[in-house]
Image 1 (cartoon, rainbow, N blue to C red):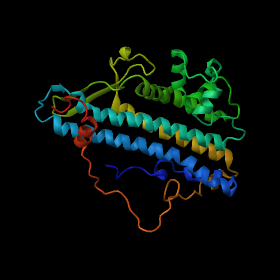
Image 2 (image 1 turned 90 degrees about the vertical axis):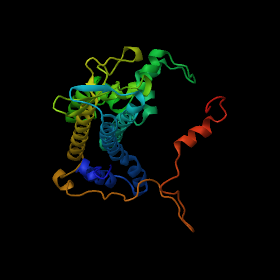
Image 3 (image 1 turned 45 degrees about the vertical axis):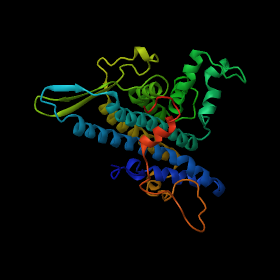
Image 4 (image 1 turned 90 degrees about the horizontal axis):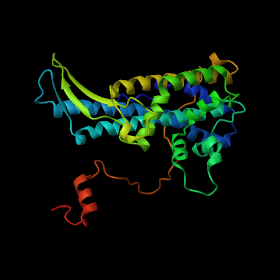
Length: 323
């Protein structure tokens, strides 16, 4: 399923050039930390691509298993257990694509001179206007403050800062394309991710249908209002087609990230065209090194997984669970 998963240079043709510039600006003892920090953008956007591939694979599997008796111009509503794998993939996509944007913020911070952009979720919390409402040492938030707390994220806070002119160090073109991306794509992406994380299962029920000319279709929707916080008020009338939204938002997100990368190269390189001819070579093994010595061991493939056995073991002491 993941044979066609795009690599870094497929997604971001000049990201390696920007990384080369950023590495050259640091002393050697800080390069390793920078490498670990910057690998997040590519990782999470590849995760979003993988979730899209998984979503399409599940859609095709449902056609094979659920549509055997379907006739032209007829439809059937699928039971929740059959639809869940679609929702798993959709939730994964929303997570990965939003985390990818947090990864892009790291490049903005590193490549923007005099940057005071938020460094992390914790720092965003401390800098956000709601921080004045938090009592030091208290773990009890009002409903309104908690709602604001869980909605914080790198790009969203940057957008709020742009609107309030808090980030004068950001280049005008960067602010323009960021606001355009936020208003057209990211606001809805963020809303769906927040709903998925804190409100409800974000996708609608799912209908499988066969058109009059014998084509299969699946109807799976996202809410009309991505900013609705009440589970009982989520509406899908008419709803946003999930697969179309995922494809369009992923395309726009990758384009936005590349626009930012290109602008950061222009701002940081003495000769941007020449800089694009160089690229930081990808580290072949991601993550911190592990020490291998003596006999090497691992875990078996395939792993002896028996989900039913796991469930039975976990519930064996519950009276009447397996009667």
